[in-house]
Image (cartoon, rainbow, N blue to C red; front, side, top):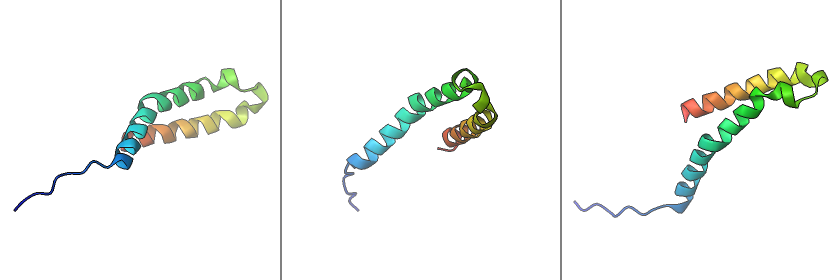
Length: 67
């Protein structure tokens, strides 16, 4: 039985590269901004911004752990 040669798929390679770059650089940047939301957002918006930033942080953490 002869195996067929593996053909490199550029779309899959670029997709995996983009995902790895996002996980290595994008996610920590997003988490840094969300962790400092109290310094960035005006005080009258903190009631909404803090729970939203917590939810987004948790979603990013789960995405990183599961992918």
